[in-house]
Image (tube, rainbow, N blue to C red; front, side, top):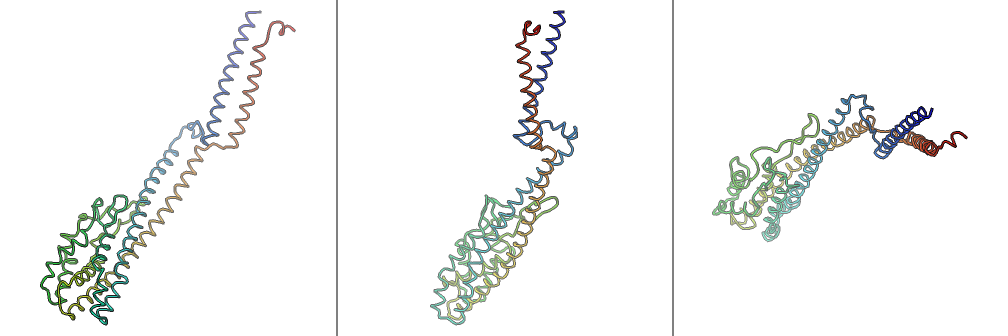
Length: 337
């Protein structure tokens, strides 16, 4: 009789111990799920089929890559827009002013108006040499270096060509040839960018956006040519007579105005590109939100149900401790009582 009771007590002890261990594990699991918001046993939740979860995780990784690329593209497009605005600002008021003086003002007025022409050329070149995050914005695929020589260096190349020129038309032809002709001084000396366009920005699955304009664009070169003509006129390079100097200043103003019109068109195209980048950003955010909702559906633990289960387990574990304590305190006298 005593031997049978001993075996029964041991079995009961092991059963209570196993129940306690199981409840403690459940308590840990539910506590973890409540704090993280995720189920602890993913295999149980998915029924062992992880394909859906893998697809969602892959989608989130791709989305993160697209989001990063979109952010970089947006930042660079915004910076290009700002740089073109700076360049446009150097000619927008300047060209009409010197054009008015060249046709109706005194030579003194013209000289005063031209006084900062070389500085304007330098600022325009500086705008095109802008870099963001180590990426030169107008350099094509040579993104790690300035795209153009400085404005002063351009003028140093042009001065010997202008020496001895007496007719404004000849001076204009020389400067335009240097800036605009294929294989001219601008392409062989001033240009320090890459041989090809920068790679398109990846905005999504099958969605690409051209990385943007380079300083080789005709609009930019024409604008710089007009500023260079004005700077050379300020230095009294080329024609010496008042009539020819007026003609030279008129030509400089006309080149700047033509270049500005092209720059405005260029900025409009860039604005369209910025709009597409913004649309891609919104789409990527929506896709990420959708994927995160799906991932939460697969892995998420219901906080209300988890909290309720946690309370139930705590009550059961507390009851188990009470029963165990009473059994541990049981004596033969109390058993026979």
